[in-house]
Image (cartoon, rainbow, N blue to C red):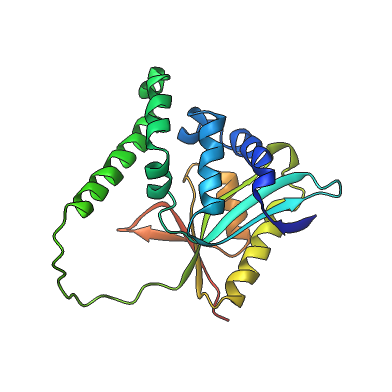
Length: 212
């Protein structure tokens, strides 16, 4: 198994793996073109990201990871593809009956509301004392072809990203996983990740310290 940087040429395979690994996700429900546009934005947007894939001996993509620092991973995607996404939802009205999709749609509306509020704000800038930001490398998306799991692809990807994060001077890594995805949670915990409680409740956020 080898880990290499991703290019736009492998996007069709990224789409296939995403849809196979996350069949119930809101993005998958929107169709293959929506998935392709999302990962195209992650690859080509103004991000400081490490986008890599695990390839087998026949150079087949078996898994991928998008990590680092992203600038508008979701908001930028929504802005660039607003018309397309609206048309897609209108062509799939049954999606509104899906609880997961409604939850994501609510998030989208909140993002657009914040963007409009920001665009209408005055030019006056108030000086505020800001707290230093956490120096963290974020794992935004990671997936392995369900038929190729337990082949070491996921571990190879995560270990590669961890080494890059250390080389770039990050102190922590962060990710969010669905709390009911017990296999993924167990996988991360075997790699040394820890759950982050929010007001005594765990909602899926995990972190790993890179400080030696």
